Image (tube, rainbow, N blue to C red; front, side):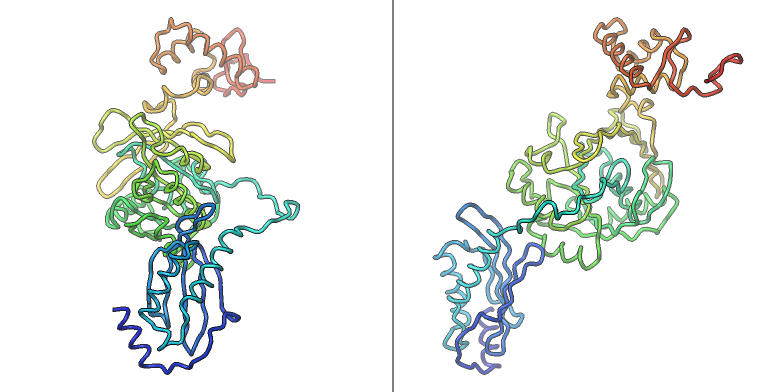
Length: 449
């Protein structure tokens, strides 16, 4: 078919016999694609090259050559291989012979490969750090779960509510909606959101988004963009980058990492290609992914190293039709302080999903996993003044440990001493209390100085 295109073009245009000149050639890079374009004999020859793999002495690229917008040949030659590029140029010569077109494909492909190799190896320019404007304080997009301009990750088992939570975040960011029931705060301007879906279909995500909107009381308010993906993010990055730029997208959700790397979560190259592609989009992002058999983050350690803000989601062991209780645990925090665990209840009603925040100490999913310090502080806040024996009893109950456990008592004593030292709680003859005691907790003859 490509030979037919070449023959048709050759018959329609007269060919002027002249040498090719590269002086006025255009060579630019947009996203991950190098474009090399020259005008010759009233025709435009354009090559688009995306580097697929590179090493110390090997660079492989996807090369796509077109004449006047008609594709002539596309394959994945080794740009650093003389035989590889020679084979590519011979394929073009077969389809568009020099005797008919005047194009010296060997010279053109040699020039193309040289420019791409030089540009790729050159990388980013060197800069003086004194001239680099320091980044302002790290900003939240949705506090305390999603950071601006960072690779955010939520991982957890199937059925733990990851996608529903992602839909909630998407709706909040797209609409700027304020609602205290979910305990989350949208801190920036409204975002343009793109949901990249490898796992389900547009009807399912659309239904979830509508249900979340109904639960928030804002039906039909969001304008979230959606794309069903069937190849790895790295394979589709050029198309997706174009969508992001054209639609002014500022926040991307990728659901999920396993399919976005074509199942190669243990392959550092595949994982690296994913995060490199994500970085090329130059937007804030949220990646959903899964756990391994041991309950940890599934795949290469490179995933953990590449994420900048990582949360683990867990769910209740008890099955409750129409309701799901989940907990969120902050597992990585490069640019911010570690955040306290979060607890949510997801309730499924007819055409509506309500996602509400719970106090972690009231959550069966989260309470037992709270640190001793956090647990004691919450117990004191609720029951002040309270004596040490009662605190030990309550902590033992939450931790599901025997009250006689010596390690339990030792951990509680250490945590209480630390809280007193940091002025989080205080102690007198009545027991322990927070440093700011509610008036209703005081007797008639007591007052605060």
